[in-house]
Image 1 (tube, each protein chain N blue to C red):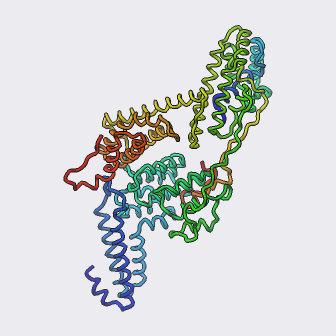
Image 2 (image 1 turned 90 degrees about the vertical axis):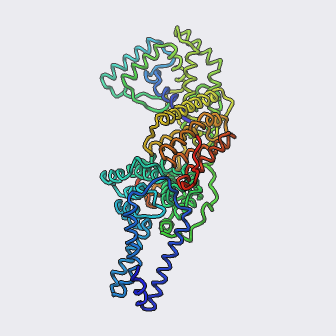
Image 3 (image 1 turned 30 degrees about the horizontal axis):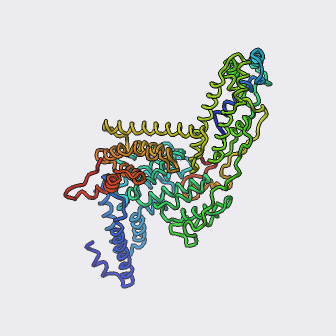
Length: 122
Length: 515
């Protein structure tokens, strides 16, 4: 099962956002952060996204600044180091088991006179 | 009626026989209607809006119907047939609404016809007619805003609630495309007393719920609705229950089956209700269990989007327990902390623990929703369960305080809003213990029982909301029985009286509810 807060913490992990290793020094992530901010200011396509274990995500200047701020705080950085244990490449998780499309009789209400025909009734 | 006797004598013998059979049939129908009076919806203190006008119109209709054979003597056969047809349709206004006005999608006609209904519709106007009009609107390709507003305006917010009120609001929500709201309201009707709405309203409720569940692929719910004690044994529900028993992927009826189920009479070819063996719950799929207790394994398991199950939740919680107590991780973090020149290991681990715990609390909700139970020795899981329980008990207390405040100020909400407030309260209460028999159930019951009972008594006696009050007593009653509460007798008495005391006004010493 997916744990949403953990997933979000991984998605927005500063090490993934800045593209640096968890063992990097402060100078390294500061330099990388400044570089990314400059490139984002120039709207270069190559830095608009970054990889996470959950797939590609959009990188913004705000996210970069926030990541740098998080890494400057040692206790927060320790937490992010724990959460950056997974490789940046996308992991494959099992799909949620929802009712098979064939098993849904979407037009049942309309056929029995309880509404109009519609697709993707929620 | 005076000219009927000479008219009858002047008829030809074969026609006399027809007229005699025809009048006898009417008499039988009348006797039948009187006989089923005990099953009619109960009077809850509501009044029909224009009873005199309605009675007058019905009298004219009856006179026309009985006098129609006179036209045959005058050889006005066409007019006679027309009158017969119109009279028959108006004698059974709900049948006409259900099989003519609703399929033709004519909301105002459906409203007028239902409003003309007597006997079982007597106390359900205008809510029943509005539900019929909204039903028409829900079938229109695109209901106009004016029509929806017109239907909404027919409802009188100050009238006490009945099951038809809930059905009307649910149907209007469906017209607006708010299916979750409609589903919630229709499902809430199952908490009400069966005699607080005419039978057609219950049929509407169950058929809507069952077809909606079929549309969502929730066949377990279809079975539940079809097997409910209030569900009528009608072809639609029989068919859907039959489909629910079929294997996954084969749960669509042929057009012939649908056609047969929509006939106004029961199709003889349909299998009896729930004859099919209940399909086993979704085969227990192989659980994604994280075998190695490693940080990476715990993170991977936390991102696995498979449906939550009790077993996988326990395993996940135990994995995180191991991680958070792992000495190697602690040492590694201590080294990193020294290298960074700051940072508290305990703080970092505590933050991580809080993240996991709050996520587990939500996962527990999802597991309990699937009617599984959650238990285990994992400290993290216990802590998550405990924090969830605290949250829900606080929420329950807040909701109860809101009910108390309204009672103390003697300010009730409009009937439907009061009902929705109770539904929210009911949802919180049932979430606390669902589905196991935990001691939390008794704690929650002891917290609310007396106050909720007093609230219901106030609703009944001061605000004349006997239907809501009855639903509250009926909700409290099994809980009291389960907890062996001393208030069992009072609740039982209140549950009985709340719905019937409008019919026992003639008693010399009218009984009253106890707070």
